[in-house]
Length: 305
Image (tube, rainbow, N blue to C red):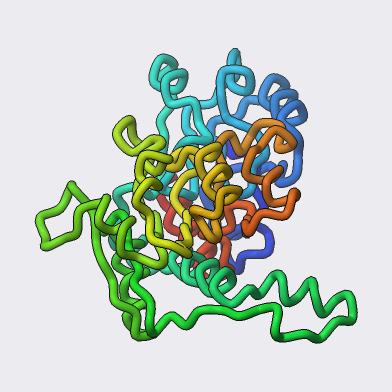
């Protein structure tokens, strides 16, 4: 089997050896889409190993057409970086972690980041860092909030939502859950927006969840509310988020994801709003990017080959 690795893995202990035990491996870890396309046309490659957190392009017809790819092995649960329709039409197998519960239950990295984004907003950490970097030292400008006295709404009560709830409770916060797909005592979505100081999103992207967080919910949102998103950019209507921030309806937005991550980032309303001074923290989809988590995930993924 000929394997092309188009994501950085050499820094992860034992991963390269495991890959090489599975077949003949070529590493195109930092190559552009055009360079990978050239490789696939010139060489018989059976399998692509990829990771959406470390790619700047989509795996689609433009990349795959007239190549020998039979399998795409993605070290991820989400698959919005792959054109699934094209792969299905061309009998390309997709391997991922979506249903690998034994593995993903050991990977709290994304929930840890969600909690970190929340703390960073509540305590103005990036603003403080920028303030001190300019040789200022005025703590009166940065009055924050303490988690212990807050209400946190958790939208989506799967693996990551449950972990986020655990972290919040450990700090003394009161939590409220909304997830229409599970049978537990929960709080209506509108009520969560009315009562919670922080709202954290942990849902999969589907037709039902796309743009589920929008200005219709903001009409009754609690004053000084923060929104955290480590799900997918399309869960929120980004233009509505920006408008809410500008109007003071939303106090802060912390996100690890944006809509159209593979497009021209200069067109992103969220990035542009952040650069215009709105209270936004953005990380570049690093939720799963920890050495420990990635090492476990890649080894599990490669063993599918």
